[in-house]
Length: 372
Image (cartoon, rainbow, N blue to C red; front, side):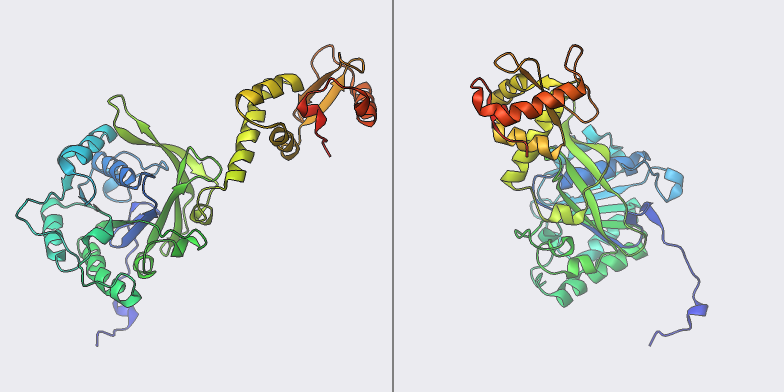
């Protein structure tokens, strides 16, 4: 039995390819739904590693002083000759340092863990420091019971040992299950053994606070404290090829992403809040202006009034009571425009109008809805 006193072992520090996020000598996994740019993220990382550019959070590589290193891309869903090649070029990768798995017509499919020796040969030949397997399910041998924790751990153990022997970071990509009522750790397809076999796990999801963005969150880290979530958008370069545009840190965490996209009601709330903040960003606006603009955006009066409450915006009536009276909407930090009533008078007129508003017929829908 290989039991020895720990004092006989030479201690070593954990090495990082991407500090805090991609450990050298270990497996990591990235989970996410289709269409959110998981493959593009791996391409972006390949471009940074092969050129020595900083990672999306601004940190440099933890090995070789940030010198360029080789990578291996194993992708079952995109063809290397067109899609992957074009994406790597658009991302600015050093193509000479990118090695892809491209199966010939007569060649057998790569199956893990049975063919782990073929991957080791490629690592020995290229000296690659980063390996992306996208998606991992496509490359597992059919004998692997992906729903069984022991089976999955046993299947991934040779891959983990390979990462340690060849001092590289192996990053697996996996799709999510359809349920959104689980925590992030349990959202990935099939067994928890996939995440359990990895020292770092990422989750990609739509940002629930801004549906135009995606977020890369880290929901497991056994080697270092979890790193902040990173926001990104999928953009097009001048040639029309898809690229990742990183947009700094995000407040959304892994459990926010795991719960999925916001409900229709929440989306409408956010849309009405964004509309109202945009309307008042340059100063107070009349309720008539707001209502006319809201109608063009198909936002109801009640949605706007509720957004006003949530944003704690004020509405103040000024002028003589009756058809000529004007109602201004203001943020908390804004004042009435020049020529408006002073605050005390405006408050008095506003309260008076509310007590007698049934007497006056010419009101718009925003004035008809109560604020309290």
